[in-house]
Length: 112
Image (cartoon, rainbow, N blue to C red; front, top):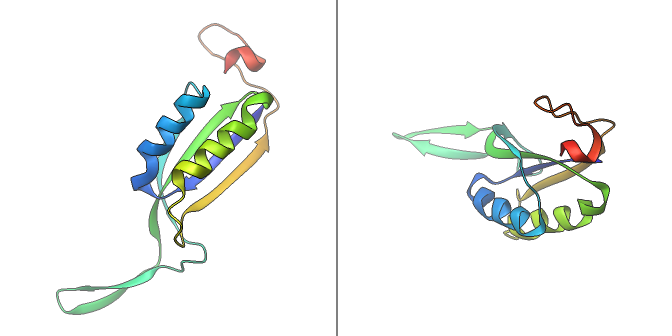
């Protein structure tokens, strides 16, 4: 099992969700986060005053998948989140030792 964490632009979230559903991902956790990478933020003008926006709004998507679904899920996220501009995001894949469904007590792949 793997835990896939993707940091994407918020307006691409629906596209990512639909792409993951097409490859068979059942559920996900989404968190609104702020951060920056190479983008380094930007400056904005508000009521005549210029200020720096250091942290940009992003969406963090976390999904737990079986090993055989990892490549398709990563490809689906990548294709759906890509705009071709700086700040499209990152995808991290981490080994997941154990998963447990609290309601039924199922563990491993069957808990996903």
